[in-house]
Length: 266
Image 1 (cartoon, rainbow, N blue to C red):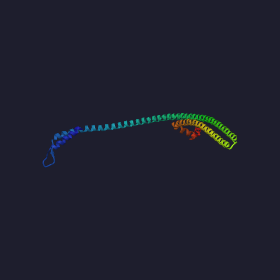
Image 2: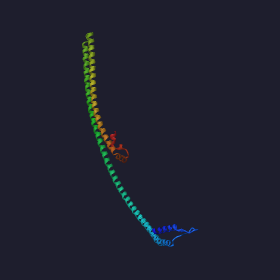
Image 3: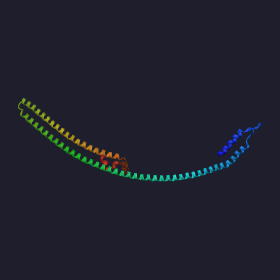
Image 4: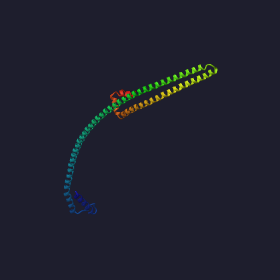
């Protein structure tokens, strides 16, 4: 092919450099040189054309081979992709089954733990309530007994003072001044008796108030213990919110149906 281009270039150079024929557009070229170049062109063209055809045939073969190879690669890639998708789907199904089994196990454990906490809290609340009731009854009984004793003592002292005043008044009734003095003394004694009775009643009220304050402290501590138990229960329930949701759904969505929950709410 390169020889064809060279021969054509030489022919162009010969034509351009040839002498022109006067009075015409023709020119005079060397015949032998032009003939040799034409022979070279005639000899070179078939070989070059055959080489070009071979290249074209090889190109078609390469294209067919490349297309077949591409089809094979695509088919292989599709099979590999389908296999990988099947494996991934199987692995995903296995992992999903394991996750569901683990979640069910966790829900069961959390439900059992919540039931245990509820039962323990209900038992502790019942025990604290019984203890508080016994303490309240004991303190109240002692306070009532002490108040009754103090009031009885005050009444007895009051009646004794009144009787002494009356006796003293009757003894001093012989004269006006004596009577006046006796009345004054009797009034003083009566006032003193009233004051003593008021003092005793005040001491009784203070004693009862102190006992009630002590009982209030006991009840406050008891309520704190109950509140701590309820807070622990609520904290445990908040950590397993999904457990409560599943548990509520399985039991009609009403957590107050549980006996321990109803006892704590009450």
